[in-house]
Image 1 (cartoon, rainbow, N blue to C red):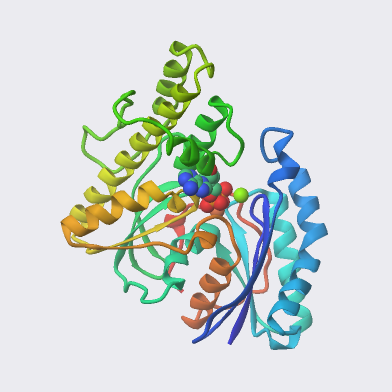
Image 2 (spheres, rainbow, N blue to C red):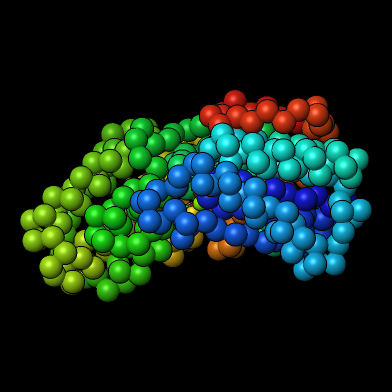
Length: 339
Ligand code: ATP
Ligand code: MG
Ligand code: FE
């Protein structure tokens, strides 16, 4: 069967088709980043309105690109939550209407389950059980994955998410949004050993994270060095921040693998696109003898391919359509059940 995926949880409108045995047939995305940039953050009402405007055209574009029509779709998967309530409602309404018209089932998917499963879209996907590091704009979690919908949270951020820390630090350094790629670019010109930042919560046991202190340490560092006056200094700060971030994530991943005895790690979410993080995790995996798996770069940040795929897996495992389209703006991943 072919599943149409629809993602509207935040500031990306995305649609994709997943086909059993074939994989992703096509995916299309419109990012609202530029619309919200002038406000310094995502404006929920603007996001909802833009989803309404863009969604039908994106589906038409997807069908043109893949040569498919509505009749070729066997099910619709949409993001039920977590996310912005209004934005989620747009996707829910559209998906439900489409499914109704096409007389196919629809299924509401958990956005973070989508992120978590994205690495499995790649060739030679790892089997479950596995450990997942979810590092996105709103979440930082280590998850023990026993199977589809069987998620145990091993640790998570007590304050800022990893992506959020990248974004806030970028703003401090006068870099554009999204901060992750901007910091990574600046860090490439930074010198090692110039600045020492903390590796929060790595000295005590456990797999929780805290990144707000790291952000504050960057702020002090920045002020001491006369703001952004010195370009090399800014690059050194970006370098030190990225190292501290990557070090901390790597240490906790190792802990999670040791704690669970698991030999497979998947990394997902926007920060999973970070080249330095991938380099360090690859080194750790080679040394410790586990495998590590990433989504392709386009499926790290928000997309509908992961939603189509998660919906496919759930429908295929017997998860049904109960015809509702209530959204769940707040929805802990650990509350999910197996299909
Ligand atoms: P959530 O999924 O938790 O609701 P989100 O969907 O907004 O949050 P994603 O789209 O998965 O998050 O990721 C966006 C985040 O990823 C941003 O914070 C961005 O700065 C970060 N990011 C993107 N690319 C990189 C990179 N190369 N290095 C570090 N961070 C990155
Ligand atoms: Mg986004
Ligand atoms: Fe996301």
